[in-house]
Every structure is written in C-alpha cells, then in structure tokens.
Length: 420
Image (tube, rainbow, N blue to C red; front, side):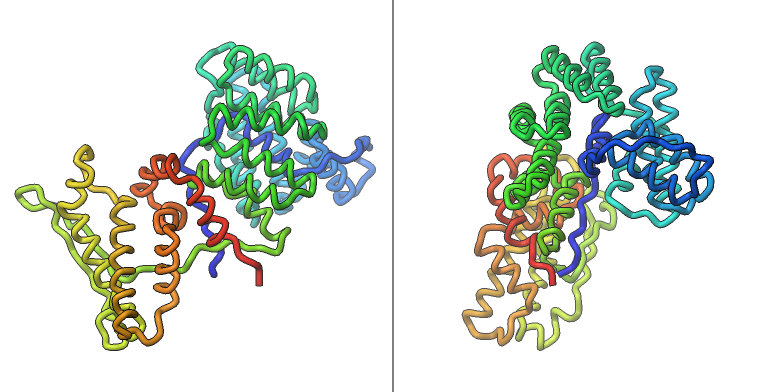
C-alpha cells in the first residue's frame, strides 16, 4: 500500500487560519525570560527562541530567530519558525501595505526553509501564502473585517481575552461569520476550556458543515484530551467536508502514526488510454484509443485483466456522444464521476462473468479490490477520494450531499491501515 497522496488544495485559506493552525501544533510551556543574547552561544539562543515559539510568544521570538537565521540560514527549524513568526507579526500591522509586505517576507522565508530541506506540513501551509503577500478577507463588511483583524492581532500577542472579545463582536455583527466561531473555539482550546471550545466548533459547523477547519480543530482538541478514537472521527469529517484541500488531511495524517496506522489508497491503476485529438469539420471529437497489449495476451483471461479492455472502450464512448447525453447543460466534455464509475462497473461485470464461468484461475489483486469496492457500493467514494481530477471534483458536492456516510465509510475502511 503506497503512502496516501494528499489531494491538491483547490481553494485559498482565510486570513488568520495559518496563525491558528500553527498554534494548534505547538505546546504551551511555562514562560521563560529572555537573557542577554551577547553572552550566549548559538545553541543557547536557538533553544530560547524555539521555546518562546512553542509558547506562542511569536513576537518575542521574532528578533532572536531573525539573528539566528542571519548566522545560519541552513537551520531548517529556525527558518520555518522565523517564517511563521513573521507571518504572525503581520497581523499586528495596521497598515494594509505594510501587512502585505510582511506576509510576502514570510513567504520568502518559507521558500528559504524549503531550499534548506524542510518538507513539513507547517511549511506546506506557509507556502500557501501568495508570493506577493496578498490576503483574502473574512467578510465583505468593513466593520466585521476590521473586528476580525483586531482579534488576529490580539491572538498573536497572546491576548486571548482580547481576541475572544473581538471574535464575539464579529459574530454579533454577522451570525454567519464562520471564522469568528472557529477562532473563538480555538482560543478556548488554548485556554484549556474544552467544554466551551466544543460549543464554538459545533456552532461553526452549523454555520457551514462543508468547511473543514472546525472539524480539524475539534479533532486537535480531542487529541489534546487523549480521546484518539473520537479525534479520528473529526479528522475524517474534515476530509469529507473538503477532500481536495491540503489542510483537510493534516489532522488524520498526524493522527495515524501516533496510533500505529498509515494512510494509503487502493492500488487500482487501469491500463490503456483515451485521448482527444481535436475535432473534425463537423465539430465532433476525434478520439485516439491506446490498448495496453498485456490485456490482450492469453494469460490476461486467466487473471481477469482482459476486462480492462472494456474500461478503455467505455471511456472512448464517454469522450464521444455519451457525455453530451448525460450532461446536456455542459458545452464541453470533462472527465466525470459518472464516466469513471461506468467504466469500473463494466469491468466488474466482466470479471464476475469470468469467475462464474471459471475462466479466471487467479484473480488479479487490483481487480479483486475493485470487485470488493463495487460490492460495498463504494466505487463512487473511491473515485471521488482516490482518483479525482478537476473534472471529477465538480461532481463531489452533489454526491457528498446525498452520501456523506459512504464517503466516511470509504475513508475508514480503505484509506486507514495498520502500519507494518
């Protein structure tokens, strides 16, 4: 079983989510005083800076990290911490141009950390900051926006009560302010008030059940309490909400090794290929079909792999007139959930016929897995979670609306596995 591929992030993050994500990943330790830097070695100052960072005292850690980075740019932990501390500092800057410049600086530092060999989840999130430091908005309402920014600035300074007050005011102004509810829950989590944090996360989910953040933060809260089985369920819910966002998978990917588990997709890779080679003078698509020779040899009948031939033919039909018939409102062909499932169902039917006639002597493992998925009505979930591209992803919201539990079942039974 290969390591699970984290789906590509197809949406931008809201302002401040980076700040909350990183605080969720560090421990709150007892305060340390900052000693005179001139009297200390690099390692001593490094420890001080990283301790401050772990406490959430990013602004205090920032000047020490900056000096350390100047002395040793190859220190990955320092480079990454400096990148985030710089991002945190941007929230304290009132001037939009200055805030944007500081965010751009944080992104450049993240690139330096990457060049030094960093590949952590934290770094991947930092690299989601636009190169120019641009930021999205919490709300189109200027008052709500400024109130949320006030909360951000208080939060990164460690003023949790001030942050909670600002987020509460934002929610009073706009009861649908999802981020305000999530961030309120996270403040309560940092304060150790798990009962209130859960209430806030639940409120955020009521506002929008199809955003991943509240589920993921709730899972982090449960992990902190040692409630690992419940945490797993919340991390799965985050993926169900937004499977193509990179952040959605972070919670489960960090939970798995702690529980001696691993994440992996079923190894089903259909041979053959169908490509469009332009259109004829009547506007019809010209299709090029490539059949894998291995599906045509005598042994292919013995293990069932000759069934992949019908999968390729099915795709050719969908590239032709089938798509227009099934999706009359869409002007251009796209790869769809319906096309992929149709092809797989045809393969399963042929495999079962071969087994019934005893023509198949030893079924190919990938085909055996495909048959099991079909028997459990999980082909759609398999395609949407493990084989989605931009075309297929367009079909996800409608399927999620009607079959949320099927998606959860697929992730639980087919993505999470015991580690070797």
